[in-house]
Image 1: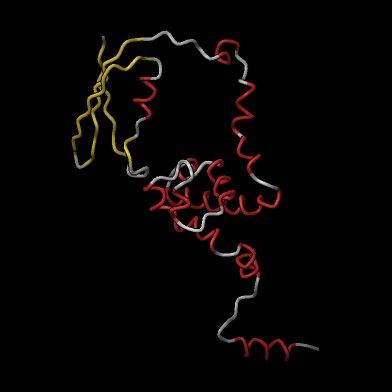
Image 2: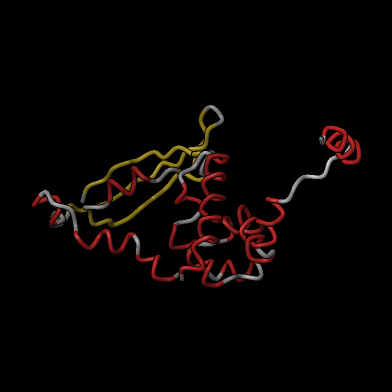
Length: 187
C-alpha cells in the first residue's frame, strides 16, 4: 500500500475545488481509502486529500499505442444530434449562443454550464418548470439555481415572439418629431 497527499485549491470561478489533479492521479490506481482535511490559508480554502492506493496495470488505449484516433469517439461526441429534429436546430443555436455568452460572463468553459447533449435533452423535454429541468441528467440543485430560470425562459416564452420583437423597430420618445422631420425631407 502506498499513500499520497494532494492539495486542492478552491476555484471561485467554478465555485468548487478543482479536483483535476486528484482525478489524474487516481486514474491508473486502485484506491483503498480517501481521507480529507479542509483548511484555509491566506483566506483561500483548500482541501487536502490523502490517498491510500495500490498501483494497477491498466492497458493503454489503442489510440495511444497505435498513434491513431479512436474511430468511435467522433460518433459518441455527437450522439446528441440524433435527439433533435431539423426544426429544433434554431432553438439549439439560441441555447448555444446563450451558453457562450454566459460562459464568458462566468469565466468558465461551456461544458461546465451545459453540454451539447444536455441542451439537446432540454429541447426534447421542453420543460415547463424548474423541476422538469431538474429531471434532466446533469442538472442538479446548483445548476438549477444558477441557470434554471434563464433556461426555462427559452421554453415558457414562444421563441418566434422573441425573434419578432428583436427585429421590430424600437419606439422612441420623439417618434412624432422624427416622423415630421422625415415628412419635411420627402420630395
